[in-house]
Length: 212
Image 1 (tube, rainbow, N blue to C red):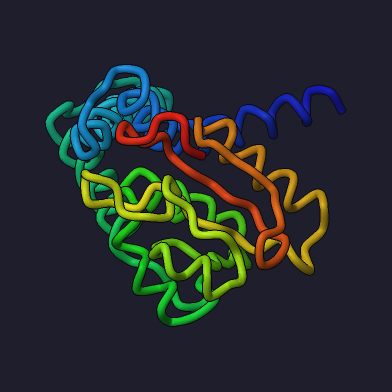
Image 2: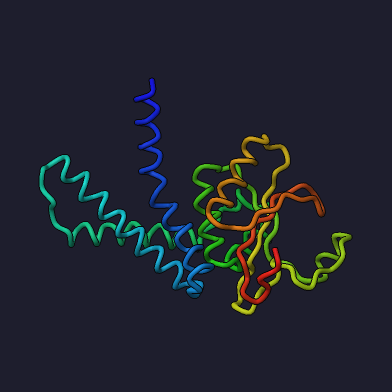
């Protein structure tokens, strides 16, 4: 039984590691190494590409006993990473948005946030983004005090650094795992009320490093 669990754990780790490298790597380069928004993603994409090449060499070697063409593996890895990245950064289903207006706000999010939410949707297809881009007057319309330093506002880099996810009518296990994912990837998370119970996820802004 222990051997079966160990085998399953290895499979899950092997399948998830490229996604972890891509998302967590981008957050690390952006927050810890002060790379630019897109340079962070490009850097993480290169790391992920290298990892996929290692995977291909290993599995191809196990099956054939040979290394094979490194050039082909490089191109295949690049195609996979670029294809996934473009889809994750620019395509967001209306099924995962509270309203059509929220779906349209997707591209206003910081690209690393877009990458993170698009990735977790593969495991949590029922995830609903309830809010992203806001203006000061939006808080007043919701009966809340207007905020000066909200990460829901566009920052100087032109991107919104926060979005909200619905937690209502979902199990505490599901919500807990979702929050754990975003924390593990390096994002700030906060479960709070406001206009309704939701999970607030944000990426540190260099304009407002104290804001969440």
